[in-house]
Image (cartoon, rainbow, N blue to C red; front, side, top):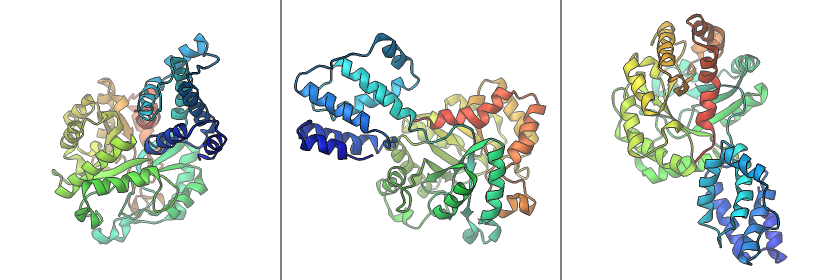
Length: 410
């Protein structure tokens, strides 16, 4: 995306400086901060600029959309988001556009929104780590997940099994390595989506103590909008951000508040960590206090809470939850995870759950005798089917739920 075409139109007096400045503001103050994909928008931007120019001069559009197309626009799943986005854009318009112009702009905005989805079609593991290093604080080299060649082997198996997206929760300060992950991505074909933000105590960077909520929020926004670590690779969500066992420390609260501020500005999804499934209701109340869209929130590790009542309370309130430590039977047996999922399915809330394993150690991997990244495919899906969980529900758990959560909307 660039402004070259619009600049040429301005220099040749096809559009006025007023219109050019309006377009510049729309792009840099609204569309980019909202993380829309502007890579193929020259036609849209030209159309919008010319519409502004026509209306400034009191000229109407020559040809209106036919009724069939108008109906198709209104029926589109992205129409409401397009309408809201148009309303925000109007604040920058130099004049009011005719209704007939608006209909053409809605059509462009629907396409723009459809092209801005972060996930590709296919199954998704909703809470994983391609690499992570917690070994320093934990004083355990097993917590340095740096087995790249073995990860590539396992990720290739994931791809062959239908997995297409990995939500990578390794964010700032816990060993995120862009070059490493990009090498894995290129060698496997998987769409690895990076998280941003800050994890939990005691794994927070020192500057979290000294920086303000606004300053931390700006760091998160910069990674979402501009790129991570001076690359053009943008983070796709905020997470994982965490609370401690049975509490949230002052620094963790600061991280949550910074993350909420960043999410509101960028429309980003937030994915959280609960320590052993505790303090989840308090996380929910914090999000509600800030009037967050709860369908853009995933509260993680609820499978190891062992408390179906709390799980039902969370999802009945509208937030999504992660059953994302699957295979870690030392925390909670998979047989009970399946029973919980069966109860959630019966209650009609299966659309609020996503699945993953949260691989964080070398000993979790197949070459070390661990469950490996393919455990859900090889073991857990057959367990769910044996207990009568439907194929439709399994598709929701691994596909359509997370696609809905990450679908761009406003």
